[in-house]
Length: 389
Picture 1 (cartoon, rainbow, N blue to C red):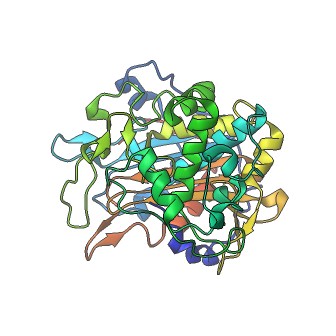
Picture 2 (tube, rainbow, N blue to C red; picture 1 turned 30 degrees about the vertical axis):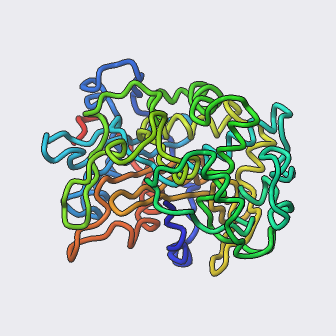
């Protein structure tokens, strides 16, 4: 699920100096209002909008949200979320956010630590039961930082693998390196973290996140199956030839969400508006304490060939007073990037249901530059409100 194999692109990314950014207030919109009202009232930042006119190709459905602190400065869609039905992408279109899911899993672990139910330094055997000798040294922290030595995955995202099957296979798989020795990006590690969330909390992974993270943050349209979505709100994904690949739930899913090769490490569905609510929660203590957020965004482990580090579900760059944290997600069809420019509390999140078109464009090529350029334009001019595209 992760696109961190393309992390080398960050080598050309300079940290954004946002000291000249000013707040642009936009008339936000409550989740209970009609989606038509949302399209009329969501803020459009003129500088961001003009940049997107120039930077984006014609074709992909894409939604972009930008904010500074508690102020939502831009939230709008472009193109179509469903070509067959001519449904426009909006601030409230539901997309697969893919590996951005990892930061929710990490936050759930920290929430359990806040309540005293585990510690990130615990060996996984404390929460998963008996493990083979080679995996006894693995800690929760090492799962969070991709240093447990586990492989990237056990198979395809949509293989019908149960929780018990995942655990059994994970305990048998050879390690790529000794626990704690090297960084190896691992979706499997984050699926094991989702198992730990279930075992320690006594709740399903999604239900724990819904009760402990999403509801307190005001995220009413984030989850696997619990939100009451209408099918038409969920974006259809398109491949490099423009062929429809259906919606995420059209692929093999268990009754309670994706199977376990995907659960905990990806597959979460959300909206740009909910990602703004998540940003707002992380700038305060709505879901995590200050101490827990320090762990979430700490540069725990250097990432090879990158002037950056991995936190807990975030890639972290820069000094403490100029920290830039981001994560992306991608599959064969969609692409998303979420970034927090922490000194100025600026959020940029964008997601598309059509990542590339053969011989024409590939949004993955410059996805980090696109993110940086949006952040640089946040608040340059006084915002105006007009209908979303």
